[in-house]
Image (cartoon, rainbow, N blue to C red; front, side):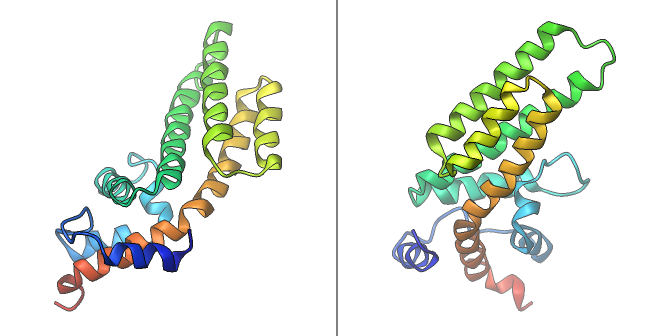
Amino acid sequence: MSYQDIVAMMASLDPTDPCSSVKTREQLDRWTHQIELLLSDPNTIEGHDRPEARERFKMFLETRRLNRASKVLEYWEQVNEWNKTNDAYTSTPSVDEKAITNLMSEARTIIQFASENLNFTCAQIELLENALQANDPASVRAALETSLTDAKELLKPQYEAFRKTLRENNSHLLYN
């Protein structure tokens, strides 16, 4: 679905949607500045309201039945959670074999989800699967980070539509 198709579809929808009622211009600017601020882990930078922004983006995708994009966002969230678990395991000097096995099992589930639900190329999926076969959390993390860049590209048209709708529905904040 192209950006123009998304915008045209949005024009016919009910105006009571997740893109209304932004509280401040600063909040609007943060949510529409760049997709990385919306997608990154909400605990990495103090003072940002990304959980709310991401939730609104998720609602935006769901209310417009953009299922593929919703799956990409779900993948992004799964990888963020896996990275938190990976950080907890790998920061401990005495990581036991069971912890690594659990970590790799979670990674396998995430990669299977990507294979079934995302519009990744064969090369992108192969990169993830090869990292998984190496049975090394660092290799898997690197491959997942690369896949997040690819996932971000898949979400850009929907994010642009989200930005446009947010700005249109909250134009009073832009000119005050």
